[in-house]
Image 1 (cartoon, rainbow, N blue to C red):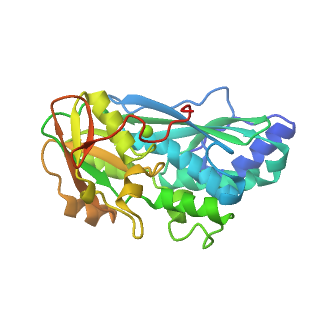
Image 2 (image 1 turned 90 degrees about the vertical axis):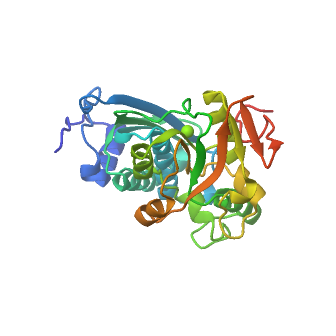
Image 3 (image 1 turned 135 degrees about the vertical axis):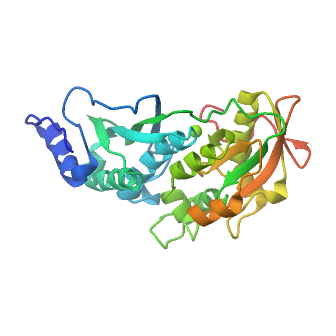
Amino acid sequence: MTDEAPLGPGAEFDMIRAMLERWGPRANGVGDDAAIVHVPRGDVLLASVDTAVETQHFRREWLTPRELGYRAVAAALSDLAAMAARPLGVLVAMTVPDAWLGDVAGIADGIGEAVAAVRTPVLGGNLSAGGELSITTTVLGSAFAPLRRTTARAGDIVYVTGSLGGVAEALRRLEHGGRGEPGGPGGPQRERFAHPTPRLAEARWLAERGATAAIDISDGLLADVRHLAAASRVAIAIDGAAVPCMPGVSHETAQHSGEEYELVVTASAPIDVKEFARLFGLPLTEIGTVSAGEPGVTVDGQRVAASAGYDHFSR
Ligand SMILES: [Mg+2]
């Protein structure tokens, strides 16, 4: 199924043509003024946008162009996972400085890898010249009953997918060790930074089994649980020792590591964690409980400060 409109002449269209060639059937509906997206009857449309900017989000020497493209799109897709949505497609807007022109093909390959992994198409995008590389990904998805962060209730159990801390550990090593080739000084945790997996199928499975609320971990477990507690107006108590850590990573690091793209979900009845692990090859771990009371988060009884977690504009 392809729905392309032919593109006109010029250097910009040549770049787009080159990307479309690399994507093949992984792009669909590109070339008209807007993409036409069919939303399953009865579903709501979910939309989210995310930007990865050189120097703010990554340094050039840390990731290959392919990893950069993959990571930008996977991170954006994680917000659809947090809503238990099924992806309908992505739109990618890139600002490309001259120094990066030779890497556009590699970035495009990474974008193609990310959309292929979740079987969703590139629906369109935009290219611009500019001073700093940036990749802005708009993701579209649909769900009949999206999971929200506003709907955790007193009495719920709190779960987290995966094992945390690998991203912070990889970044720590990259900051100290310079370059980050596969197998390089990023260490064994580097893959967690370079190649995050949006937990889309996991989220839909959890929603079908009665999850009440969800958020993805972008700012760090405790910071994102705090967002969840604030949005749901509940108190959340986390058992620090229960937080699943990557090997070689401390609980402290695991609790604050950002850009993990794992999910925190709440549920009013226990979820079969063994079945989850069997299906997805990933742990699902009970880490806390929700109660009524002053909205906020405690770890082992200690209140989590409002400053926990990453904030682009904190000075
Ligand atoms: Mg999010």
